[in-house]
Length: 337
Image (cartoon, rainbow, N blue to C red; front, side, top):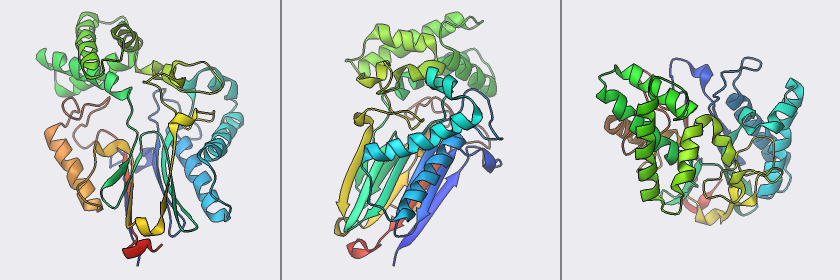
């Protein structure tokens, strides 16, 4: 007997309609989690954010594939199919030229997918959503760029706290400086410069292969220019070969190095866990209760996400730091589907 557990929740549990994650559960065929990228523009299309449109489109494409009965595609073929579906939305909304010119304006998402194939499973990962098999074998590609921004926000946070500001104001101003960049004109310019310099030292100490001058440029430009490091086969962006590069599902091709495909026999798989990055780590056991316990522990230790679990966003009363999703499939002995 196959046992399936799942949870998906918006960062604000009182507003489930804001969730930019999606899950797919097609018993015996496919299981997936999809993380729509947080929209920084504030725009809405048909009442939805770009992240919601991207995540829903990936879910629809995966579902159509799983029920079609066709052979499992290669990773590049799957990405191409998803890209076409997302790009169709740009055409429909009349923003294709804008999206092509600036990746910042694109709808994007990550994907972790377990697709049933004859004799086993094909596992696809694009972005930083992950998969764990049998409670021990973890498949995940963590972002190399996120820590650069996260350490800057943490440094900003500590300085605003030292000024005696209320926590909600600390959170607002830290996020604003992170998004707009250290050199954006503001009353906090000197403080932001100090925080940037601290972050540069910490980033280079952790990753000596990175250039301090380039990290400075990243933090000066702010989170809105994260897309400068998008890896794209059709455009010359830094991310194609750069160690900070990343490859989202956003309607355009991405280099093969951002597309991860693994195969497992049915006998080798007893449990499958698929999860988005909203848990800030991995649970001790393959049960939703354990994943929630892990998140509660993270929340107790670092609620503002400026310590061990530093991030570009923190939590607040009644609101988590990020949307989160997990799908757990217990296939039983022998990997029965």
